[in-house]
Image: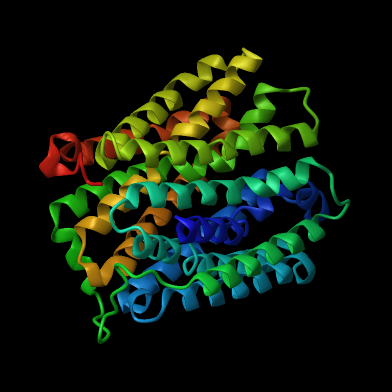
Length: 389
């Protein structure tokens, strides 16, 4: 577990790049004169870059052609450089979108590649190891809100510089740990498009489609968290909103870890189904609670717990179901399509906030519903993945 924890911590450091702009959104909006929809575009640019990067890694088999620790290192360093350039060389939205897109491409070499490394160190308990990785991704996503809330620096650019330092540190840590003794197989030659053969496997197909429904909800929810917190606490200061946003997103670390632990008892399929069902139910109920300040915050925290608890379990099921030599490519293509879906939900929700108000969260509901329908075979018995771990 020492290596698994080390890789998971490196994942946390690298993934601070993901939502770094959201953590300084207030100051950035003032400096650049942005609108709320512009912040959605900056988030979507990262998602678009991640999609392009993961699709390239998957279709070309590059994710399974080179040592994952090397890919992780160079992706972390490149992402850190792009983040510094965003902070100090971009002064308008068009430039910012370019740098955020590049960061997204680099994250493709961090997130799915980190999951492949985890599988190489914990082949018998992927649900637990990947749960820890996704938990660290969640903390990485939430950390910019924490840095913003403690008012540690008057300049938002210094916050982004610190995030870049974190990313490089994560890459160096993974380089030191290296690959595990299990599960790292390399393709001998490039086989363009071979990864799509995994969709012929029923269990992989069910898991991937469940993941796609989960992704319609996840990143759009994380994008909306500061806005939802501000709506629940109308008199809160900017720093208080950042602190509560960190709490709502960061509690997902506990949710992901809970999902990994429970996968050893219930199986990954059952954990994913229950978590997706609860988060989908909270999508429906939340607008009715907005008038009750503390109740709304508590429900947001519960939502933040379950919205990510299923994510690692989809990856655990998929990694066990696909061809061993294509694990990196399979996880990359699953991530790529899932994040493509998330762009649609982010743009849709941020574009309709002013029209629908808090009821905009109902636009998230189709994701969990369709995901639950797609993955229903995963909870029918041992042969369908309930005991995948």
